[in-house]
Amino acid sequence: MKDNEASKARLEALLAANAAEAAAKGGAADKASVALDAQKQISAQALAQVAILNQQIAALRSQLAAIQQALDASEAKGKAEDAQIADLGSRLNLALAQKVQELARYRSDFFGRLREILGHRPGIRRVGDRFVFQSDVLFPSGAANLSPAGKTQIDQVASAINELDQEIPPEIPWILRVDGHTDDRPINSAQFKSNWDLSAARAIAVVEYLITKGVDPKRLAAAGFGQYQPVAAGQDPASLSQDRRIELKLTER
Image 1 (spheres, rainbow, N blue to C red):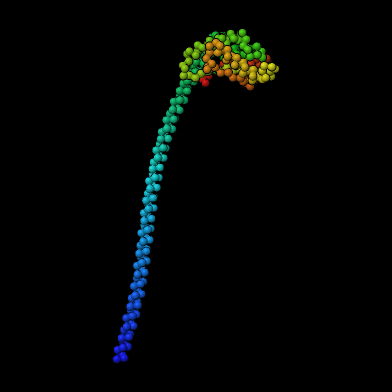
Image 2: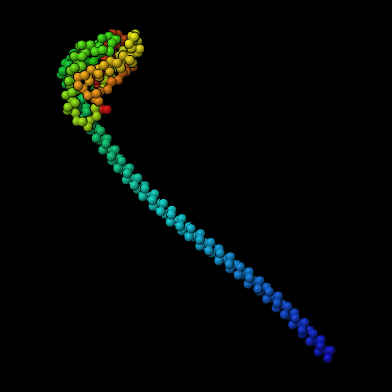
């Protein structure tokens, strides 16, 4: 009897131990399942974030492609415009060169007429692209008022200019530039404080007289160079006389 009770007690203890072990294992399994569920949730969130990032990257790539396409189109347009500008520049240079050649021809005609009109008078000569009057031919010494003989010379210049103005096409932008020059001796005059003043005043006097003879003021320009553009090296009277001069130049505006 006692042996049966002892066996029963051992059996119950064994069953209790097994039950406790089973309960412990069940709790561990439950914890593992919870942890697995949590891990699955974290993985799902990560996958969702990755999907969002992939969408953002795809959108950025699409934007970059559009920007690159726009840049390529702008570059192609720029090259086309550069080519057009280069072509326009070439045509413009060619047109300007043609105008310069035309003006050179009219300049030659103008100087040829002046030579015919004025002949080979002392103090008047052609030098390159300029027609030169010694100041003594046009002005009294130290003055900027045209002498009667000087006005006669300029009358003939005005006649040649007015004839030429009728022949040169209006699209050629030409002017007759009148340049005044002096020698390097300091001027001593209450009217002119320097050779700059005297040279400019003489050029202006010629321009103003040409205007009274019907020359279009838009076709005229006056400049004074003082003593700073000499043409003779010496200091003798003949050299100084060459430096004192009025130059006429038919040129582009």
